[in-house]
Amino acid sequence: MRQLGLGVECRDHQADRCGQRQLLSSSRAPCSSPGALLYHEARKTRNHHGTKTMTTRRILRLSGPETQDFLQGLISNDIRKLDQGLVYAALLTPQGKFIADFFLARQGEDVLLDVAEPLADDLQRRLTMYKLRAKVTIEPAGLNLQRGTGPAPDGALTDPRDPAMGWRAYTPAPEADDGSDWDAIRVAHCIPETGIELTPETYILEAGFERLNGVDFRKGCYVGQEVTARMKHKTELRKGLTRVAIEGEAPAGTEITADGKPVGMLFTRAGAEAIAYLRFDRAQGTMQAGGATLRRL
Image (cartoon, rainbow, N blue to C red; front, side, top):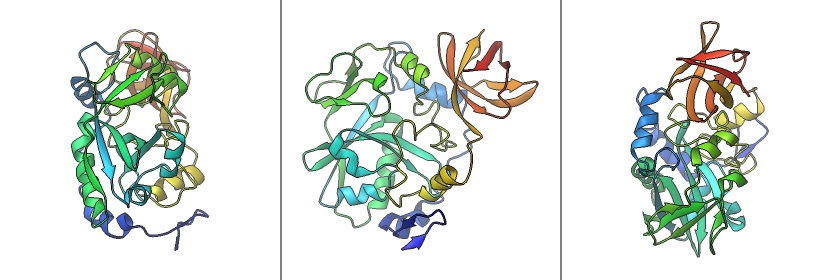
């Protein structure tokens, strides 16, 4: 057992002992500030129905007798919650920064992993590296995601981030949704999305993962846990995602200023509101982004 200095004891798990050193350099993303480039790259992967759809997903299957223990030592949430339904979680770098977010669902003795298509190859590679000799198989599930906010079909699971995000189901049918305006829902409830608000520079607490049921502070050790726990217990968040009212035009990725000083970045917009990443002590009163005027909600 080793102390984390936060009143939490943590047992060295297999990934900490062997995998972190191997992945340390590969987990450092190239210079990629959370701006317009990532936003537009994410849009390229979406279904061609305007901005109302969400990123295309890939469903992986993890199987084998050590699957649950393997995931428990890696991800930000408690895998034991699978008995209650979908689990939302993230994989982090040892420095506590975002690599990927995903949903986990139990299917018999296996675990389904639902991840954004642009992150799927890299996530599978990292999981395979961490797996070492663990008795775990990672392969395509042969399933696709169906989702919606209306009446849920048989077998559907409630999205754990917020009731407004509806349900998710995994079947052999082609990926589909019920036409919900996902961007409007995300903005109304300040729910980040991969490649837009969630980037390699993101700390998950600044992205609202505690509010979105994506992190567990009692489960014990996982990759990036020490930094995340320190942010929770030792500091007050000074920056993070929040909703803003917006008037005028400014593309996603535009820098937000107040009194001529940078205070953050503009992200997803829906009507007269948007999600922004702000430095809270400077985000007071009226702010500007391109040709738009903003105020924090």
